[in-house]
Image (cartoon, rainbow, N blue to C red):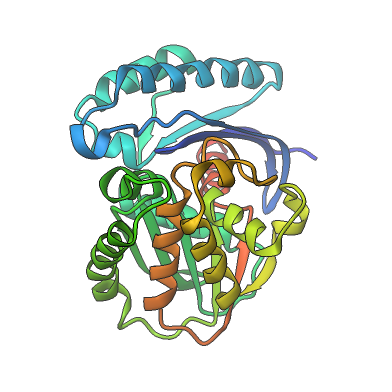
Length: 307
C-alpha cells in the first residue's frame, strides 16, 4: 500500500489518543492506536484554566507519542484539541508546550469542526441513510445528523467530566444530584434536537459510549471486535446507563471493561447519553456503536492536507 502515513492526535477533556495510519485514497490501514487518560480538563469548567498538573500529565503522554511517531516514519502529524483547550484562558501556553514536544502546533477545533470530524470518522462503516452521530466526550457532546454529509451539527457544552464536577458530588450520585443534572440536560438538549427529522440510524462513538455498550453487552473484558458495529436496543443501552449511574465508583472500577480513568465520571456521561436518546427524534430502536470516531476524521483530514 502506498499513500501517506499520518499520525492523528485527539486531545480531549479526559483522554488523549493517538492513531497512526496509512491512507491511500479511500483506503485506511490502522497501524497503531493508543490512549492515555490524562484528565486535561480537570477543573476547567470552574476555573477557566488548564491546571499545571493536568498539562504535565498531557505533555508526558505527548512525549510517549513523539517516540512512536518517530519510530514509524510518519509523514504528516495532526494534533486536534477540543473542549478543554477551547475553554481555557491559557490555551496559548499549552499549545506552545505541545509544539515544543511534537513539532506541530495544536489545532483547536471549534464545536462545529469537532462535530463534522466526528461525523466523517464515524459514518464510514454504516448504511447510507439519514444518520445521527453522538460523540460524547469529557467536556462536550457533539450531535451531528446527515445523509453522507452533515445537514445538522451542534456541540453541547455537556461532557462526562463537566457534568460530574458540576452536579455529581456524591458516590454514588444522590437522587437530588441526578435530578438537578437531568433538569439541566433536558433544558439544553431538547430545544436543539426536538425538531430534527426522525433519524434512521444512530451511531454512538467515543469511550464513554463504547464502555456503556460493553456494560449493556455484559462483556468479560473490553473487546474491540465485539463492540465495533454492535447493534444494541436503545432500551438496553439506557438500562445500562441507569445501572452505571447507581453504582459506587469502586464497583464501576471493578468492571472488567472499565478503564480506571473513566470510572469516576461515567455516570455524568451516562446521564447525557440517556437524555440525548430521550430527545432525539428517531425511526429506529437500535444504536450502532462504533470504534471509528473523531480520531479517524482527523486522520482523513491530515491525509488530504498532506497529499
